[in-house]
Image (cartoon, rainbow, N blue to C red; front, side, top):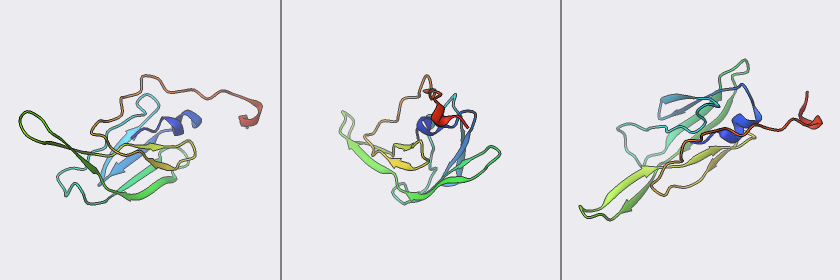
Length: 121
């Protein structure tokens, strides 16, 4: 899951992401995380929640999502990969980006929003 779009417009905030009751903190320093489902039925939809952890601990995402399977032939027989790439948009919306058998690459830097008169409070 890539939370960098949301974290970029909410500097100093952090998130807690939980999938199938396994949780992980998501911060600007590591905005791309891998959430695991555990030893359950991999095709069954599980609850994905993403919540703010700061002074205003509201929930951004509360949806059931299912992992997708990709099967690739190999010299030793077919290999299957289960997963789902998702992104938390700047407005807190969950974007499901599909699955190709490969996870997002971890971001090295998080974009910093520019300061303009319109976004100064």
